[in-house]
Image 1 (cartoon, rainbow, N blue to C red):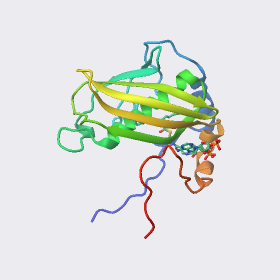
Image 2: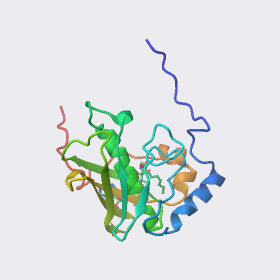
Image 3: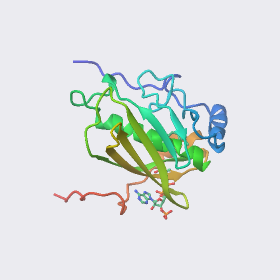
Image 4: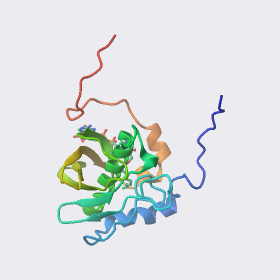
Length: 197
Ligand SMILES: CCCCCCCCCC(=O)SCCNC(=O)CCNC(=O)[C@H](O)C(C)(C)COP(=O)(O)OP(=O)(O)OC[C@H]1O[C@@H](n2cnc3c(N)ncnc32)[C@H](O)[C@@H]1OP(=O)(O)O
């Protein structure tokens, strides 16, 4: 039996220190030009961090509609043979949504993510990912995304609700984690509710 090792927060995996976070967060207030690589969320971000060898190292650009990326999943992301793991696909889409924040100029985090896996996402196959802001209502950003293959077939669609947060969300993440309350059911969280026994 393998001994369980606690996941300690090493310097490599820890979030930015408060003074670094201030600089980091400022990058989201600047709208970069279209068709050039946007900055990664963080050097070790699982979705886009160039320094994370386990990550997807997604490279994302803006256009007039939102953001887009060209991406291939590989053997690190396998689920069923030759097919990308659904969680890996979700990771990339969540991260892609996070790049829309450069077009909003505000900080926000995922509150709700829903994905339709319309067809298998194949390994070692080029895809185009696109995301845009469907609507905004106060702090609520309703977002949409697609993954399309080279034959213009959409294989995955996703929707997300991101909620705008202030800088304290990142400066005091442990405090915020302990402040979480019981989940509420919302209309856009689809699917049947579990029956009580
Ligand atoms: C900027 C840097 C980004 C960098 C990285 C990007 C990486 C990709 C994105 C991510 O992975 S982010 C990481 C994963 N997400 C999180 O860790 C977030 C964890 N959740 C939280 O910290 C809190 O739940 C959150 C800050 C998002 C919200 O807490 P709040 O207490 O501020 O919100 P609240 O629960 O009061 O809900 C605000 C509003 O949204 C509504 N709402 C919440 N969930 C909803 C839902 N599912 N559908 C519809 N409405 C919803 C809610 O009813 C309410 O409406 P009203 O203002 O009208 O009353």
